[in-house]
Amino acid sequence: MRTVAVVGSSVAGWRAAQELREQGFDGRLVIIGAEPHRPYDRPPLSKEFLAGALQPEELALGSEQEEADLAADWRLGTAAVRLDTRRGAVVLADGSEVRADGVVLATGSARRSLPGTGEAPGSHRMRTIDDALALRDDIRAGARVVVVGGGLIGTEIASSCRALGAQVTLVDAQHLPLARTLGIELAPLYFAQHEDHGVRVRCGTPARRVLAEDRVTGVELADGRVLPADAVVVEVGAEPATRWLRGSGLKLRDGVVTDSGCVTALPNVVAVGDIARYQPPHRPRTVRSDHWSTAMNQPPVAVRNLLAGSTVATYTGVPHFWSRQYGSTLQFAGYAGPKDRITVVEGSLSSRRFVATYHRGGRQVAVLAMNSPKLFATHRRRLITALSHPATTVPARS
Image 1 (cartoon, rainbow, N blue to C red):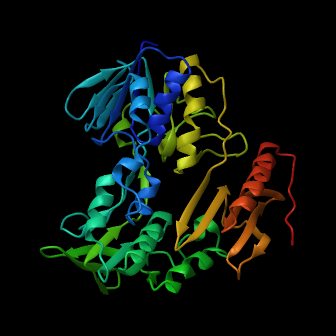
Image 2 (cartoon, rainbow, N blue to C red):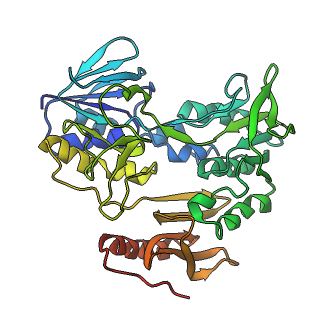
């Protein structure tokens, strides 16, 4: 390969570019990104950065020297709009194109929205560093903030806004947010933290639209109620950013479908991070993981296969994530399901310091910890062993 294009300049794209050089690719490397910024870390946006504990320069993924070592051709501030696989070309929004022998797809995910979102001052989404800066400017002590969306990012934003002294209302369409992620037994424990810290929680009724005059005035719910607001943050989930790949010939199904090595139907095109729907060796079905850990850990395998021209390595990583809210730490690894049997194996729920394991069909499939980082590390290693050896079962402790 003489030219490789990395489409996406967030963590998955950055790691892929690094791996290309580290694995010996010395040809032309083009990094394409829709944002004008050099690669930066997104997870702190809803936590330390929003709270003012970090400044923009502290989010950079690489140093000036590391960026120089890539010797890359940076195409930032212009999104990719089409992949012409027959011609080996990535077409950009400004009409230009990048011809490449190999392509790494790392365009991440796009935030879903509500009518009225972003149309007036005070209405926000949380996707980019510019989004976080705009929201940070709007948050002040006593301000009425409505956060629409009770997922991990939405709850982190609620926690950060509350720490800044805002009056926060958290809205979610589900009766029990995070139940799909953590299970119906444990999700209430995490959500109770919000009310403990003075956040008003309104669940079970979806938001219909963001209301505004000269600036945002509130959120209208599906039952007609209006929640007054000085600022609104809409965080109602995301979808893989694959629309630009329609017509490319690649198989798209809630992501770009790949094999176990992140290789698409075309051996010279690989996908990593949020958009990759891959086949784990320890799962019967394909999965897609939008966690930071997957974006960090998939590129070494994907790049090796890209440079080899075929799948010679398999990605065996187990998805894991962490969240910090109101001073408490949540850590999770594995593949939880709604019917899993959950057992607390360390600590207690009442103390909010525990480790719980998830079991399905006699096998451990996930682990969750609250305020127990050392114990989580131990149980996560056990989980990886259990998933890597299908014949091995790890019994739940009572």
